[in-house]
Length: 266
Length: 141
Image (cartoon, rainbow over all chains, first blue to last red; front, side, top):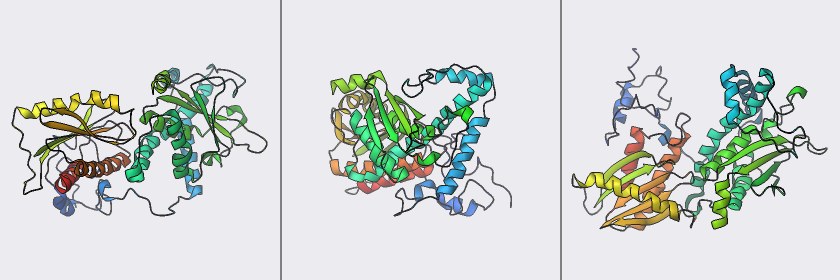
């Protein structure tokens, strides 16, 4: 069977590619046509011939993912983030990322780039953060939709932080975060503490990369949720190992000035 | 009764728009806006964004009912958690029906967002989305 010309196809299940869907959407429902036209070789159709809109947003009771397969996938993601530093351009991107490292977490103070290899190490969390960011953006709307009529937008700092530590954390990791603290030194900083982050439970960091914390991925999720609710902030993950919890991670949340100004008015 | 519906993104950029009429009381679901009224609709709807920005911090509900009116036209708004605005221009008050309509559209939007190739503030061009929104309008409005 011949492969169908994508431009001729009237039914594109969930591709946002504007070149495939020209003009404004119309009320025509060309689903019937697609049922005859779709072939098993055509990758744009799912096997069930259903679009993303036919699927349910509610997950079934106790549907959980295998931790080992997640760990494997996540390990690959970390490697992917590490490998893809091609050169000077990526180095420049570094300047857009925050240079602050809280002094109480890292006694070494702010880092300075010395070599490319060091840049690779410092870029990895940023990339993991971006991976998490796209997930957080989606989770926010999904969780609120699942709340149904009782869903409410969070308008206060404490409200949104509560939402993250309980609702969000519970939905991803099946447990609330271990603690939420306000920084004593800075008005705009909050710390969310996870004694044993699930994502890095199978990851051991080599000595020369001690700055790296793979929970940057989770920091990205948190940052996306905060940004989405109009609490622009920077979220970074820092390892604070203790006797009892060697993998203890502190997510440092630093809010933008505008958030504090608004909070003062409310 | 005619309706004009628009989804506005986080940067006040339009993501989707549609016009439809009522399907209740024997309506045929076709919008009957005069030709010169149609660009005004967009104008009226988008001018309510300022008001939404003011009231969105005062309450934490997502469905904000009627936020603005212009002559005999009302603008109702539904604000999602990610600050995406659903705006509906209508000429009769029907809070409950509009809430149900918005809830259905919210589900559709959340599904759109589940697509890994869709990013926030991208135009929603899916034909399936469009037909589902019209279906929801037919059901409730």
